[in-house]
Each structure stands twice: as C-alpha cells, then as structure tokens.
Image (tube, rainbow, N blue to C red; front, top):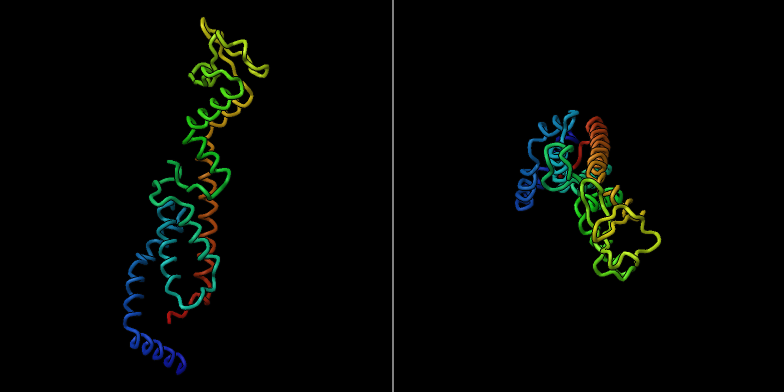
Length: 228
C-alpha cells in the first residue's frame, strides 16, 4: 500500500513539475472520444467501418501518449492497419463498396483498377492493337448484345491477324474478338461484384482480429500502463 501511495505521489510531482507536458497530454486525451460507447459498438455484429475507424483512432491516441511501448503491440499494429486500409470517410455499410484503400491487397488493387478504369484499360488495349496491326482506324467498342469487340472497316479487314476471331459482319465493317479481349471483358463485368465480396471478406477478417485482440487486452492485468 505504501509503495502504491508513493508511486501516486511521484506521478503527481512529475506532472506538477511539467505543466506544459501535462497540457499536451490533456489535449491529446481529449481526442480519445467516448471509449465506452465505441467499445460497445465495435463488439456488436453490426459494427461498420466507421465504428472500426473510431475505435482505432481512440487507441492510436492512447498509444501516442504512453511513455513506454504497450504490452500488446499487436493491438497497436492492428489499429494502424485499420487506419491505413479503410478509407477516410467510409460508407455506413461494406455492401456499399469502396471501403478499402488501394495498397491493402494486390488482388483488390486489380479489381479497383478494373472497376474504376475500364475505359482506360480498353483504350490501352486499342492502342496496342492498332500498333500491332498497323490499322489506325481499328476500334474497340461495347454494346449490350455483343459485348466488347474489335471493329475494322472493310477497307482493312484483310489485315486482321489470324488470331482475330470473327464476331459479326456489318455492311461496311467486320467485328472481331480475341482471347485477351474476352478475358478483359469477363474481368471488367465481374470486377465490381468481386470487389465488394473481397472488401467484405477483408473487413470481416480485420474486425475479427481487432475484436479478439481487444478482448485479450481488456482481460489482462498488464493493461495497466505507466502514463509518466
């Protein structure tokens, strides 16, 4: 008991002699938010990306004023991952999509590129095909009936490479497809759905790891840390 009293007195003396430091700590702690409310929300199955960010921000603030590394470094690392992975202003539900930042997963990065820059990818493919065939009027287009296709006017249709497969004949042009174009079409048309599915999986995994780490932290006597 005496040792505890003396430790408390030493803490008080420390802060009394460092009033600027005490002010900085108070300002930092004011950003913790309602920890009890945030903890209650994150433990629910309905916890959403904003709940996860709020709790991670609270923990990051707390870790920033610790005088020594916390015993549970894994929890701190998870908080940093959450703040790095989840977009700054996420939607209320993961089902709305666009929750995870680029850089969190190479697979997700590809789906983001396909779902947001399909026109750019098609333009790049069109330019490559024009250069390879030397047909400057070659076009890659899309319609709801035939999907993606390569269109070459009748004037240049005899220049079509052997790997071009005929898709449709028009009065003044021929439409073709290639294996590469069909593969790109499949990826583009399914990218948004697969992106949402992968984001949901990544979010659920991250939330589970975070909640498990929080439970271990809160149930351990080592959570009492030195704020000096």
